[in-house]
Length: 331
Image (tube, rainbow, N blue to C red; front, side):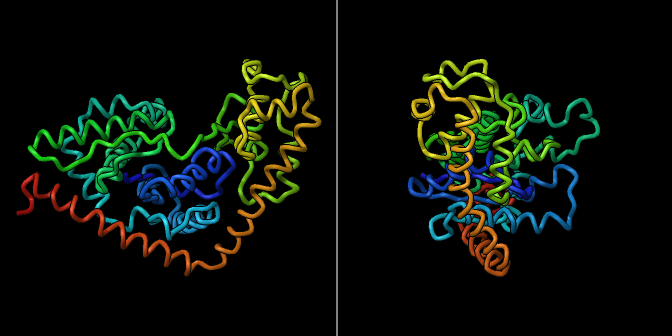
């Protein structure tokens, strides 16, 4: 089993990133061979500040390592350091079809009404995503609900390429359900919206670098309702903010939502929020300290990424060569 996944180096990771993806990645390291990359090529599909991007790659690498990604267990690298990614993506653009890409819901969402003004890269983004996975013959890809369509596209591209060129080169990857449960963390100001860096309100999210006092303050001010907590998660239906905070507590402590409610059944948020703050701080404080240490050693971070890229280049090379040969560009 080989697992491949990437994350865009946008800087300022928040609790939603940690509970929704990164801690799941950490658990995966003990279940499969894992390659994790900083998707800096994908970052070019929208307006980007070149001066900020390089720093964000280091920052994201530091955050992943601080959170538990172990370079001794997993291959960690920057996508742009492995030319096989964009090279294979170009080859696969001859296999992918406009109709397939037009159906991508993320393209529709991100381009909005200004499709004519969106970059070509944003439109073909899923083809590069397919190359990211297929170049390593990944068997499984951990994805959220919003990315399942892209894995289906990667499977379609793999099958069509193999059929078109009468080869058995690409593995059609499966969505990966290992690594335990990933929490869907919502905004602290709106239980119907995901926690996001793009939200204009700083109070909507908890950054991995927030101080203990700031974490406690944000959770104390998190939007809730006046009702006490029930004893059954089903009774949180129609209470999105309450469900969100209970879900965060469950993810932070490793409990089930039902177990959390058993502890706090009948109590209000005046009692629940301080306990949630304590649990969140206990999780994030050591990560923050490690992140600060790593930030102060950019040479070490660059060395880890370089070693990871060297291994990734070696793993990708045979697949890329065979793809070139299949289409008639190599002997």
